[in-house]
Image 1 (cartoon, rainbow, N blue to C red):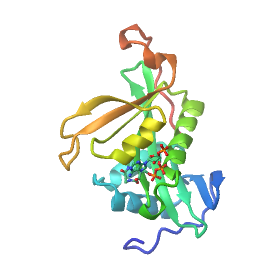
Image 2 (image 1 turned 45 degrees about the vertical axis):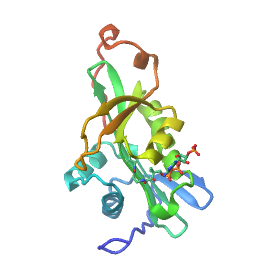
Image 3 (image 1 turned 120 degrees about the vertical axis):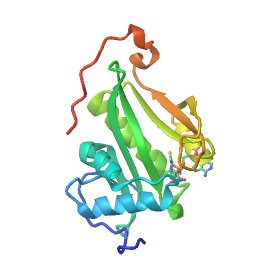
Image 4 (image 1 turned 45 degrees about the horizontal axis):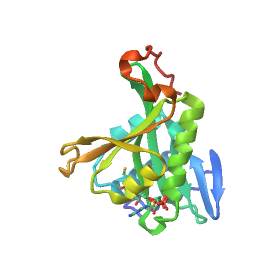
Length: 194
Ligand SMILES: CC(C)(COP(=O)(O)OP(=O)(O)OC[C@H]1O[C@@H](n2cnc3c(N)ncnc32)[C@H](O)[C@@H]1OP(=O)(O)O)[C@@H](O)C(=O)NCCC(=O)NCCS
């Protein structure tokens, strides 16, 4: 529950998977209710505060890379928000910006499924060369989740978060370009967003 009511959403737009009584859907960019629910769910459970403009930036530009999970009562219990961009003009890099699961629904494989859906979509639609993200060095759950999917720690970022905690940057190499040095790669055109 949040101050404006509930996390319920009856919109069936973009169903991509059903696992048991959980439904995985793409975010509907026309749904104000989903936007409100997603931003509230993240604000409630992520330590780093984000302004409404950050949510708009991700959800308006890359709605195809936001997925939600709903239970049988239509309550939104998980969300992932991502984007893609060019890295140094030579690699197409996916970036997972935010991932939150309602505490009651944790350790059931929901985050893993949301990350896998995002990875698959980025590879299929934008042929990403690699996917990156940052997480707090103390976030053992997130580190275990991402490392179990093949992400590797590539950098430690000193006092990266407002909490003053350090972050690890993790990268999942996808294509051959991810394994080549930047100096040896041709430049790429800008990816097209919907
Ligand atoms: C981190 C978080 C997204 C994990 O969600 P989840 O749905 O519980 O994760 P899953 O059930 O898909 O677990 C995937 C793997 O991570 C492991 N894992 C998840 N949470 C864990 C924890 N707290 N401690 C240890 N391992 C954990 C699981 O055991 C599982 O490992 P396995 O594949 O070897 O069995 C969730 O705890 C959360 O929303 N935390 C708050 C927000 C946050 O930290 N977001 C990530 C920021 S980058």
